[in-house]
Image (cartoon, rainbow, N blue to C red):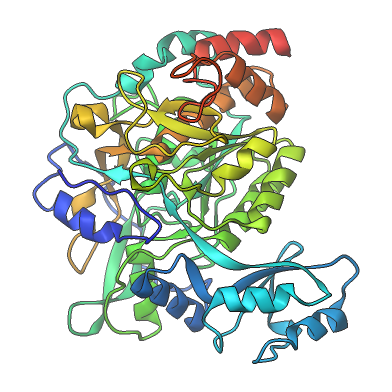
Length: 500
């Protein structure tokens, strides 16, 4: 069995997918049928040519940041001329008008200095600047595996979801859960893209389809922060799998069930996967294929958190992380909780690779209403990959391949074999087993949506109820592996009735 745990070096998920899925995917496939008329690339890309090349170079050099790009927060009261003075400290002396803004945070791209640590240090030393940091890359915290299975959703039985649904039947449509990830496809449409066929850049028609087991009518306020100014499209499967745990349609005779299956889902795309980056490269006339997926920039993650909190999301899930801390993300999480949005964040999959601290999970311990989530397996033991630390707050099923594929988390997502070769398609779905803290975190997000629907609207209170009703595992009390313990949704819902 091939296992991928995305590490500090950012190893390619594409290479692992090729090995895993060439001879697999034997489950039944749901096709979406006829597509809309073929569309050209009518939507402008979100990234400039320089930024696309930055992602490509980050993959080639295995960097955990985008070369030549930093996030900057100027001190209060610093206006245009003051900001320009700070920028003059850089060798290229960029104009303040070239900055992109995420709220009060500026994004600076400087092609003349690819070492973002140098850029950040130069800017941070200026009296006009509060802080500056590289635009670090996060990665999805999941592990794909063969989709053959016998008993599939052991995870829902383990946490007693059927009895929890007796208390809160799938939440309700007034609750909105933002999924900050690789995206969730929001259209049934075929797009004309350019791609690499092994020897040249060619035109190709690429079909996309909405997951038939998560109705498009449940999508609300979708937005793409990285690929283009058009419909949200998932080209990496991760966001779709995560959203399926949160809210996949239930009792419809298709594939699996979801926890909060009556909620609405806000698809927010912050990650470039292999095919995103391939299409962007080819559109710019850059030959060849990317050496890895592009990753998820801290700038995009921070922007998506702010967007979710100000566009009606009650709950958000972030199944992403990396070794690079970010003031921009920490501030966005703090603001989101203050605005009433609960956030679940995956701990990371690095336990057996040195167990480094991962961000943004590390910030959860200091922000009430933001929870870091570790992963457990079928027997409630710590999943071998699940990162640990004093910032760990709660655990949920994330799967453990030590028990075979049946010990992983099955949900609906894009058919993996359709992503192989030079000409992919993204319109067919099947049951796929993943493992990772990426799979644990949406359990907490889904249960938080049930609690919100049950009348508990304060993110800090939601966190408190989840912690106080968790099943204590490992060392007595809070510990590094499980936090306060493994979530128990029925007890949490009963506790919510007492708290509200």
